[in-house]
Image (tube, rainbow, N blue to C red; front, side, top):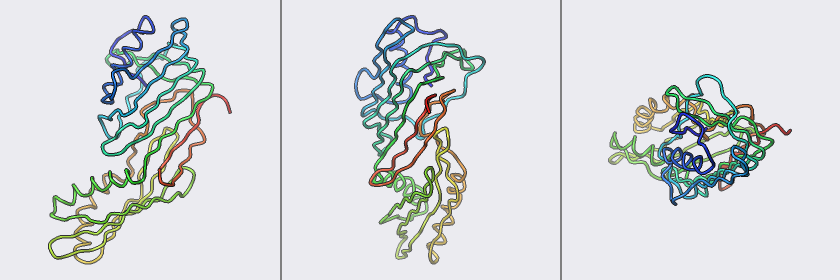
Length: 269
């Protein structure tokens, strides 16, 4: 979904390019002047829309999922080739590689509650999405968040190890083991849980629990518990893009040195 700061469809391909640039700048800080290229054919028939987010920096984590349009969605654009790539997009300290490529795409126009235009993916003959990040970067994100919480209690976290194990095509078991230190006391703390990806590319966290040894382990899990409770059963959008009639399918997770999520979409089986 691309929210545009206008109440009507841009009149030509160049105006569309400028409007898309302005929309993307609300989500990321670009690394180069132009992120969008629009190849005209006979507007609103387009040969291509190409969006490059290479080395852009995400403004929010997780990315926001915008509210659905109000009222009917009317036809807007037909695009022979549509692509969004980021090699990488920087999300805090993580380098996330992103690719969304589709052919024979129909974009519809809806309105938000303020009457501004929303461009939505309605149909595509076929397309593929891939999102990937190094496990070391994911571990760094977890370490940073956990250390900030622990520091409020005067606890230092050391030697964190993140283990990720596939359970099904869409689900992962996660385990974080870390040494907690406060004054002259040290202990091992383990946090376990599950991540599952749904049909809208939302990541669901479930079953989060903390286990610690001794007095310090009990203390550490005591203050981590409320934070885990807030995270438990929440969902985080991996891609803020409603797919309309172009339903996602064949969603899969792969784990090696990277954590990679792929999905197909479109009308072709």
